[in-house]
Image (cartoon, rainbow, N blue to C red; front, side, top):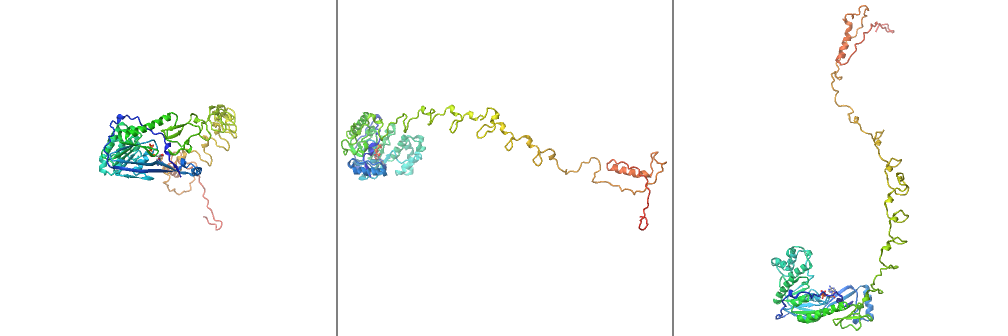
Length: 544
Ligand SMILES: Nc1ncnc2c1ncn2[C@@H]1O[C@H](COP(=O)(O)OP(=O)(O)OP(=O)(O)O)[C@@H](O)[C@H]1O
């Protein structure tokens, strides 16, 4: 394991707010008579163990063996120890408002968490009388819930009953200046609104010990004024208030005592003006040094040679012959030379944008012009067919391959061409266009239906009566026995006067029957007299 006591020093520059108009906070906190001790912090150390970090050898243990071991661990994933708080001791009293100042990463938040019991000290002890209430920027509010619900949950967590919380919801929403936003999920809040709500929830009840960590930083002047009044009230009721802030003006206005932390240690502890003045001077000297070319920060890793203050050997962390910047009389910082951005071996260097062989370079318009053997720009002329190369397809490619006429659009072997109407004419063995002729009947095939196809094959109805006698009910007269006609004398044919004798009767009868059947029946012609011949049987000679 490696020890990295200066890890905090690489944090970005603290955002120190000197710009707050003191008129926003007109009344200075008045130091009142102090009560008994509320908190005793006795030589507290807090060390974080970070997995996977790069081990940085301590200056005191920078032996060859340690460096070799450190490098070995670095390659397999080392555990880095970050000593955030290192041996802090102080006593806080009832009725005090203590401001805690320091640059980024100096251990302010860690110290508050240790005092509030949220992070056990690695070493040392904390004694406390009363119930601490830590209000931090990361206080556990549920962002998916509305402000109203968070007020309820926070109030219950502080020991209030449901009725007490319900009665206070509107007051808290008014104090945080949320308006109707109190009914919306906290996701919809700005950072300032969320910070105001956190402060309002934490101060629903008057806590014994209130710890405010940067929660006021996002508030506007009006809200800071309200906050100050509330803090004054808590302090007046013999509570103890801790205020972590980068706003020196707020600390000056609200606190009665200030502790300045630097790299996890108490650098100064005393009355407001003395400590704030010293801290302000320290910050301004850092700013001045930064403007002069030095980098702001209490210390630098400087190739792993920067160690704890007081343990650093002269010349450590400095390149040979390179200028150094002294920060606040304690930390040494290697100045960044003006030509630091020039190419260096093994480091990030300025990329040469000119073409170079085998290196990354900037692509210029010249690079995309046609050239041989490289990626080049495809010009209009290049869009014509080429063999074996990717090219741009132009409208010309869609024209017939052979010849400009339709004839040229006939199938060609092995090439894609435009399909014309000619291509859909009938051809043998290929698909062809279907014409009307294809729909005329042919034997054994489907044919066109005509009107006749729709008439019944045999009518189910009887033939209509057209005035005659139905054939199904014929009236038959029995025909009289035929007698042999008597020979008619040629002199007396009986037809001279129109009268007829008995020989006319059969003709008349046939004519009548024919009329009744509705048919025109021609009278039978007069039969001639047939001689009667008597036949004899040749076997017995008798007539038959
Ligand atoms: N959870 C953590 N794990 C590892 N290191 C941490 C953790 N929290 C803080 N640190 C380190 O501890 C050191 C002190 O951090 P801390 O947040 O207490 O400083 P701070 O003074 O509150 O900083 P700031 O002003 O930026 O809020 C820093 O170097 C930081 O990187």
